[in-house]
Amino acid sequence: MCGIIGYIGNQDAVPIIVEGLKKLEYRGYDSAGLAVCGADGFSVVKQKGRLDALEIRLKQQPLSGFAGIGHTRWATHGEPSDVNSHPHVGQQNRIAVVHNGIIENYQEIKEYLQQKGVTFHSQTDSEVIAQLAEYYYDKELIKTVVKLSRRLEGSYALGIMCAAHPDVLVAVKKDNPLIIGVSAHGHFIASDIPAVLKHTNQVYYLEDNEIAVLTAQGVQFFNTELETVSKKIETVSWNPEAAEKGGYPHFMLKEIMEQPQILKDTIANLLSGKGAEVMQQIDIKKFTRVCITACGSAYNAGLVAKYVFERLLRLPVEVETASEFRYKDAIIDEQSMVILISQSGETADTIAAMREAKRKGAFTLSIVNVVGSTLSKESDVCIYTAAGPEIAVATTKAFSAQLTALYLLAVRFAVGLGRLTPTQAKQYIGQIQSIPKKVAEILQEVDTVQRYAAACVGYKSVFFIGRNLDYAIATEGSLKLKEISYIHSEAYAGGELKHGTISLIEDNTLVVTLATVEKLYPKILSNAEQVLSRGARVLWIGNAQTDDYGGRLVQLRLPPIEELFAPSLSVIVLQLFAYYIAANKGLDIDKPRNLAKSVTVE
Ligand code: AGP
Image (cartoon, rainbow, N blue to C red; front, side, top):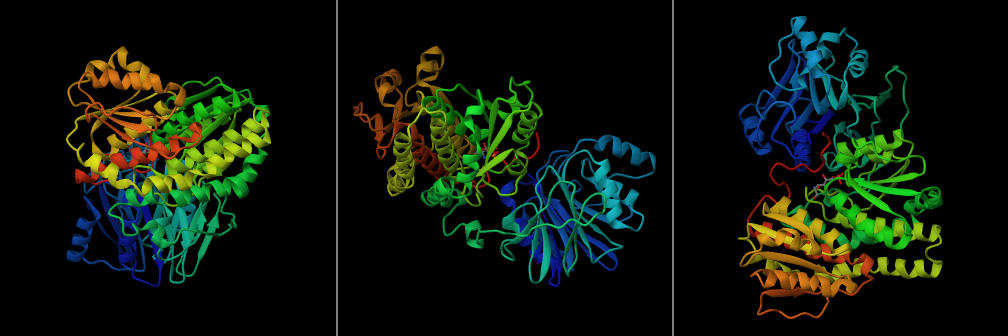
């Protein structure tokens, strides 16, 4: 979604802001801009297009100043255009605003202000914020912001500057992330940590309806009653390099390669760190129903978890996309546990699903990667994955970390229900602890996948099939391929082929077949033979002995592991498969078209 950065300090704000916006590009955007505040008001440069185009514009129209706000826009209201870009400035050129989120009552505010003689220039919801702030402004900036926050409905993270107060930068948020960075030379507001990491690892996480007032000298926090709020500063453990590519051609490949380490960190944290404490707090016996809800890849992780939970807990587990869950009037109550999975912790549908679950009295457990995110703060308990900053839009390491968190949760709950003895649990945990090493083994063999993928660039459609757990992880393989290579693909339960899909199988159709569930080998092999006999080619991922059918079946084996956790190994092959096809197509792998890293609006 949109990205915000603001700076006030003793250095020129413009290069700092531009550099910070570059670190937010991964959030997906179609336009960018910035404003600096000088003694004679605002200077604004903003336009449709990428940041390098903005930099060219800034060379032609140089700006400088000690305070400024910047923005990358992912259009939600009003098409991508110069006039719809942020910052938006009120008609008196007095207040400038950058906004991430959606103002749900912007139409009524706009009509109200138009009746008062205010002229609007853009089609955005965000412009009403600047115009309303100017309308309210009565020389007291913070009071204006309080009044503004009470009038706006919807979600927002705002950076606000006022020409009459050039030495002040104000921030306020509701349902959208905003951090406050504190450095030796100045202070920051930003949508996410990578934007400020080069300057500081000391940050505050702004809470909903808190107001941050930044000057070159320091930061103060107020609530909407204008009472001072004291906040704890947090130290971010991510170093600047962690948010850089580290020498890889794409963040996605770097993040694929980071998986052994981050899985080790995640498992360690969940076995003995803060995550373990959180898991110990949960009495699974209190619940008669478990629902898992999430979006995209996080939903696919939930599909895998369903099979693992049901196998170990012998409890029915429902999995639902959050966009469906939030409106379905779910049959849940105090005896239900709703598990919400989200890398960003800011996905609008998943947040709404959590709030709906809480409204119905259910216990909400979130599995989140971004510390301080909305989901992590509002769910009853939160288990953090330790995947570090995931910059590529297509999730890999965070997905794998979610799987290991779900496995450990399942083992702990199974012990809690008496379904596993401590000894059995220990054996399962030993298998989970072996995942990082086995992932590393697979990553040492990438050239096999790379060669196979290079020959797949021309496919227009690819099928992924599997049974049981293999079907669940096949959905993730299909999504990975679609989102970064733009090749259409579908994931099917192997047994479903004959109910329609098989009519699509032609000469050379590619069918990626997941085969790690031992008792179902004969069944999935039969499905593979059904498509081979109709001319298909098969990429067989699994260890069952099989023929190569005249070279039309290629087998990729996996290190042996407890079958329940095999998805953590097969998904590595699927990630590499999708990555190398997209890389061979020369696509913008880290920022695929139309996609955003965190979908913070409906
Ligand atoms: C996955 O590669 C996609 N980027 C997307 O499906 C993502 O998983 C989904 O939007 C959910 O995001 P979240 O985990 O941050 O909630």
